[in-house]
Length: 126
Image (tube, rainbow, N blue to C red; front, side, top):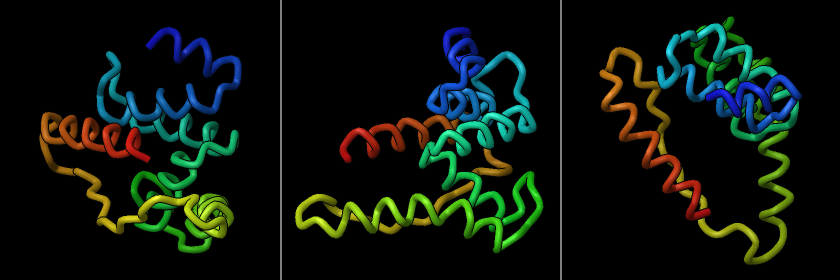
C-alpha cells in the first residue's frame, strides 16, 4: 500500500497499476472505483500494457467510463501491436489462450480474490 502509493506519486506506471488493482478489489482501506480509474489512466499513460487493456475493456463495455468503441480501440491498439511484434518471431510467444473476462460485478469479494490469485498464477507462467 504505502510503498506503491509513494512510487505512484513519483510516476511509476507499475505502482499506478497496483494501486488500481488494490482499489478495484477493495484491498485498500477505502474502496474507490474513481481512484482506481485515475490510477489506471496514469498507468496506461506510462505504457502499462495491462492498464491499457483494462481501460479498453472498460470503455468497450461502459464500466465506470463512457461507453465508446473508438476509445476502446485506442487503448487496445498498443498492446495488440506489442503482441503482433513479439509473435512475429518464431517461438517467442508461447501459447495464446482465448478466454472471456468476467467483470465480477454483483459477486462477493471472496470470489474475486480467487480470480486474482489465478490471474497472477497465469501471468507468472507467461
